[in-house]
Amino acid sequence: MRTLALVATIVLVGCGGPSLPACGPPPPADPGVELPDGFPAIADLTLTSSREAGPSLIVEGYLPHAIPAGFERASAAFEASAGYDVTKDEVEQVDAEVFFASEDSTGQVKLQQTCAGRSDVTITIRPL
Image (tube, rainbow, N blue to C red):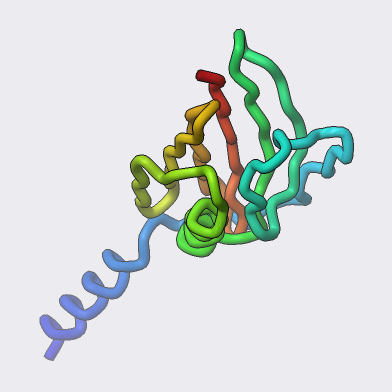
C-alpha cells in the first residue's frame, strides 16, 4: 500500500508542470502604444511599451492568463482576422509562439509565463 501511495504522489507532482511564483502588480498600460491598423486584436491584451529595432516594430504587453488561455486568445485573434495567416505555432508549459504573415509583414507573438496567472507578450512585426 505504501508503494501505491508513493507512485500516486510522484504521478500527481510530475504532471503539475512547473511551480511559478505569485505575480506582483502588473506593469501599467501605456495608452500611447498602438499596434498597426488592421493587426489582429488579442482579447485581454494590455500594451505596456514599444520600440523599433531596425525596420521591425516590437510591442510588449501582458495577458492576465496562464499560457494555455493566452495562447488560445492569440491564436483565435489571427484565425478571426482577414489578411493574416498563422504560419507556425508552438505551445509549451511556460512559453508559446504564434508566427504570422500578411501581405506586407511577418512576425511572431511570443508568450512567456514567469509567474502564476499572467503571461508576458512580445509582438515582433517585420515589414516585407
